[in-house]
Amino acid sequence: MARDADQGRAGSDKVGTICRALRRAIIEQALEPGAKLPEDALGERFGVSRTIARHALGQLAAEGLVELRRNRIAVVATPSWQEARDAFDIRIELERLVVRQLAGRLSRTQIAALGAHVDAEEAARNGPDAVSIRLATEFHILLATMTESPILIRYVSEIAYRCCLTLSLFSRPHSSECAINEHRLLIEALAGGDVDAAMALMHDHLDSVAGRALVAQAKPRGRDIMDILAPYAATPAQTRRKPATLPSARRDAAE
Amino acid sequence: MARDADQGRAGSDKVGTICRALRRAIIEQALEPGAKLPEDALGERFGVSRTIARHALGQLAAEGLVELRRNRIAVVATPSWQEARDAFDIRIELERLVVRQLAGRLSRTQIAALGAHVDAEEAARNGPDAVSIRLATEFHILLATMTESPILIRYVSEIAYRCCLTLSLFSRPHSSECAINEHRLLIEALAGGDVDAAMALMHDHLDSVAGRALVAQAKPRGRDIMDILAPYAATPAQTRRKPATLPSARRDAAE
DNA sequence: GCGCACGAAAGTGCATGCAGTTTGCGTGCC
DNA sequence: GGCACGCAAACTGCATGCACTTTCGTGCGC
Image: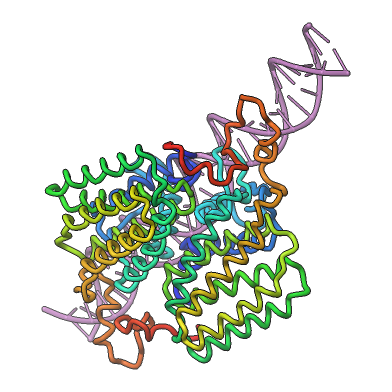
C-alpha cells in the first residue's frame, strides 16, 4: 500500500501505529473530546517509551485531533461550533474536488468496492452509533483514496476525521439512514459519469450532514467550561475567551 | 497572535522555531528539494538535541515539505509534477473559499494591510526570485489569516508552502509582475464585495500561476531517478513505483 | 469553618546514550 | 583496471534519566 509514510504520517512504524490507534479511538468516541492523553500512560499502553508517544501526539496535534498545551497533559481536541462549521465548509470543497476527479473514471472494481462499503454501513446501522459514524467517514476516505492523489487523500482524511470528531460532539441521535442512501445515490452518479450531478450530490450530502449535526449550535454538551459559562458570566471581567455564542461576530475585529 | 500552537504547529516553542526556520529556508530555496537534513546537524545548528530536531522534521513531514524514510536521512520533499498539479487544484478550491468568506467583509485596516503587502511585493520585484516568490505566497497566507478560521488558515498555509516548493522546482524564470497585478485586482474585488468576481479572479490567478509554472510538465530537473528512468525501463521487472508519466493510468491496482 | 500556603506527586521538556541500519571507502581478488 | 566484499563512519530508532512545571492534597493560621 504505497509507502507507509503516507497514511501513517510519520516515517516510523511505531509512531504510525499509535497514531492510527488513537485516531480510531477518537473517532469512535472511545476517547471523548477533552479526554486526557498522558505520555507515560500512552507509552506504557502501547509498549513504547514516552518519546514515541510524544511524537505520535505531535502528529495528531498537527492533524487537529489532539490539543497540545505546553507543560500540560495533551487532550483530545474539542472543536468549537464555529470550527466545526468551518471544517465542514472546507470539507465540502475538497470532496467536490474528489468527486469531480472521479466521476466517470471509476473502474468496475472500484464501484463494487464502494457498493460493498455502503453495504457494510447498512449492516452496521443498528449497531453502535460510533461504528456507523466511523463507517460513514471511511466511505468518504475510500472515495478520496481512489483519486490516488496523496495530497488530496491526506487532506480529505484529515478533515473528515475532524468532522467526525465534531459530529460526536454535537449530534447525538445521528440519523444515518438518509446518509447511507445519499452514499448510494452518489455512487450511482459517479458511475454514470455525471460530474455536475455528482458534485451537487456530494455538496448536498455533506451540507445536510453538517446541518443535521450543527443545528442551531445545539447545546455544547461536554464543551469547554468557559464557553458554557460565558452567557452566565455577565461580569465586565469578560471571560478572556472567544465570544462563543456569537456565531459570526468574530469575523470583523481588525485584530 | 492567537495561541502560538496554531501557526507553529507543535506545542513547544523550540520545535516551532525550527519548523519556521526550515520552512522559510525551504520556500526561499536556500534548501533545495532533495537537500539532506541530518538530525544532528539540525540539532547542532539550532542548539538543541536530536530529539527536538527529529520532532520538527516529523512536523514538516506531516506538512509535506520534508520526506522521511526509515533509517535514512530526511530530505526536502521533491514533489512530482502530478503532485504539484494536484496541490494547485486543491489550493484553488481552498482559496476560492477564502475569497468567498472575505469578499465585502474586510475592514479598511485589512485592505490597507493587503495593499501594503503588495507594495512590498512590488518593491522586491527586482530582488532575488526567492524573496518575491515567498512574498507572493505570504500574500495568500495573509488573506487566509483574515478569515480567522484556524483550520482554513492552516490548510491554505500548508498547501501554499507546498506549491511554493514546487514552483521553485519547476519554474525557473518566475515572472512575477503579472501576479502582482492580479493581487491588486483581487484586493479591489474583495473590497468591492463582489464575491463572484473575486472568486473568479482568484481561480484564474492561481490557475495561471500553476500554468506558468507547470507548463507541459517541463523537464523534471532534479527529480526522482526512478521516475526519470521509468519510460526507459521496459523490462517486465517493473520499477515497483508509480508508472509515472501516465497521468491517469496509475489509478487502479486494487492494492 | 474557611482560606491560604507549602510540599509532594504527577507530568512534561529535553538531552544523552546505546543499538541497529545504512552508506561510503578501502582492500583484495579476478 | 575493474569488481566485489567487508569494515568503519555516519546516521537513525528508541529508551532512559534529569530538570522544571503544574497540580493537588494537606496542614496551618485566622
